[in-house]
Length: 281
Figure 1 (cartoon, rainbow, N blue to C red):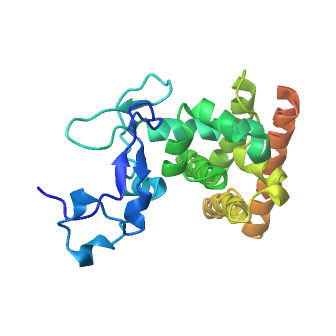
Figure 2: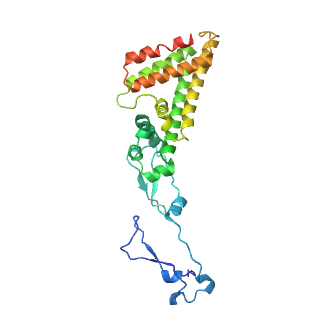
């Protein structure tokens, strides 16, 4: 097919290529000034002055949006580019999004928002910077996604334990679980990701802070439901303020997590957990 546009660009020599191996192009200054050579002599006058602006690399990159796959198994190493025949996307990425996000949770949980560098996060997640920004956004967005994932898991665990037996026993089981959970950790992060995040609340991005508050409200409501159920079962006096008791229980659990983070032993944590029933008596 014959191109009717003037040649405003031409291929540079083979020695000048982009980092991706593509040949560089060079702007033909004479064409931009309307000085059309003999090869363009047959181009209509009204076509000669139409300047075609090349699309920026950023715009082209946005056109070729990342396509993320969720393989059933992964070796946990860095992502590998997947080359597909018949298209122009030579750098399509393939990695397990959930696995990468879980590693971000672990890193933020252990290091905190301010203590975890972006490079450390990328190394732990096993992905490249471009894939991270395309999938999760910047560091604040990644932290928000990680905290949301943790809160969803935490709430599911509370709901599961709350449904076992009588409400007062389920309440005590939650605190017993904190002790066992903290004492069983040998190298992972201690404390609660939510509580740890609250300790650096003033330095967190403004868009993240509401999620921290939401997490505590969710836990408080879960405790209040347990107290009211225990009242209905006759194990807690009806005169007890369920909402007030829930706030006290939340404070106790948060305190246990902070103590665990500082290296408190089992006896110290056990003594605190045993106070749960007394707060609703």
